[in-house]
Picture 1 (spheres, rainbow, N blue to C red):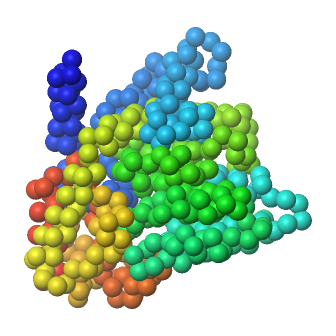
Picture 2: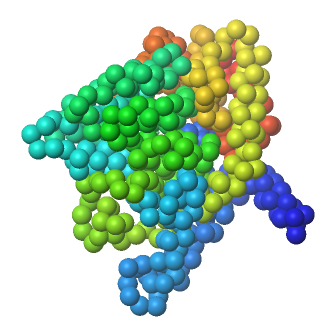
Picture 3: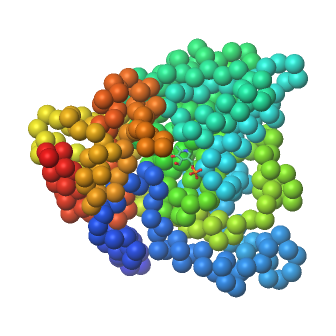
Length: 403
Ligand SMILES: Cc1ncc(COP(=O)(O)O)c(C=O)c1O
């Protein structure tokens, strides 16, 4: 019994690492922080809802039983991955929507008439969080404090505590940064906020599934997780809402998701997110973070060896997502380096608007000078990345930087 369970797990891990039917050999995919390929097991899990289990899960006839069960199972699977209860999980159509529901929803629900609500966030948040906070400021008369980060991209919980006022309703600080992978000290921040009776949201889009995340250990009231960062399709996400936390819905209508998010449930994608959560839980138990950390470090070390003294890593050296390497190479420009290395699919540290490249606000907030930020590339490994991939990618990037 034990032997066969172990054998099954091992086989699953080998399958997971060795084969993805649709991932090409070239370009080598090192952009997992942008999005992940959909796991073939996730595709399998969603297919019944595109076929026989097509009915509306809210219908009262027999055909609704299957879809309703799929949604309930997925809710349990997502809850299990983050240490929540199933009734604390609200499915949304994207991470951006989950962030907006958490931030606007919590502040609008908690606002006291005549008192301008105050929100605390930090400089390297994803645009989805910054936009939700800005909307509160511009449209709902909220005041906002944006706490800075240190050179490694970390927020000091003491600075969050100092920013809290009697009018503060919500603190929103991301768990892991999408560019550098730096992890924030969320448990300490949550403690500081709760000491003042303030709600805490964390955008854990990048961390859930990649590192163990437990909402009770973090002590947060609201947490965003995103399907397409954990091998489910784009267009599905979830918000953890701690039991007892009131939210003002963004979308009203049919009362789905406990009245917090109207709209007939996207059963195939919800099933996909549930399956992705269950697979992620097994991968975490199988020590996948260590495998990814080893691959990521091998990539950086090989690149550094080829380009002696020219490679500079950004973000926190240890408090960082396992798969993430954000770095710059002296005397290069990130987007030109990637243009010259088409066999590597990765991202830069700059944003491109109509052909103009500007340094990333995340790197700028960390104090990087503009030329270092413009030289930055973001390399992120994932479930099907192999040693051969990272060795080849390091050699290709080094060759590009030497020409
Ligand atoms: C940290 C973070 N938050 C939120 C999002 C937004 O998720 P979505 O693309 O599903 O709206 C992303 C995706 O890039 C992200 O990395």
